[in-house]
Length: 327
Image (cartoon, rainbow, N blue to C red; front, side, top):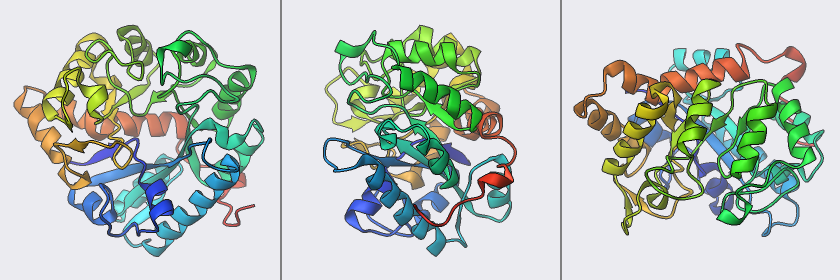
């Protein structure tokens, strides 16, 4: 079954380890995506802002490297920025590649850089990672749970809405989630977060959050990290636990709010779905658990397609053609 995965850290490892996108020893490469029948993959430019001199420069370098990898493999994968480009890629038998940023500090507090990142093909920004930044606060620990967005975070929401960029609240504090809900005029997503009622981790979403996300037409991507999937001391991300989260979210917020956000190449644990080539294991299991084909298709790609259409739009304005020179 086709699928769209809303989050992986493969682009960062390609940049750091100097491996190729076509074939590598990571959880995701083009060969694995093809075998797994991927329709599209969202590739995050992940930044640990405390380990780099400039988050902005580091992010630009990652984008440049990853776009070069896409260019080298343009017969099998295509950079996408909107729904039309995804349809064109799939019609040509190619995988759609959406570029994202995981850590809003890539802006270094300069919100005008949103325009540059949009030009460079960035479709989504995860507002925070595990540190407080110029936009807001993380849910890495419970201590920031009730802290809201900072003034620049609220302004970033407005600008991202205008630019048709996807706002991602994974990693964001509960207070920040509520501020995005208050200030965003468009749906938003939690690209790689599970249900807190099943696994009591601050990175997961409460039932109230899941219902609110569903009400505005957003989605959450099921994360394969064992610590987000289970309260048990298990070293592997198990399909049983994925199904439990999916059933719970469907029951309290509806199947339309569920997508896939594997976090492949970002999580340290082994996964029962060993890599992108094996995503069909989850589809088969959901069908065995009584999910209809339509429900599984919604989880695997239809819900994500809807978000791409609703937020990124049917086409990118001509004045935002991809700038091939990284400034």
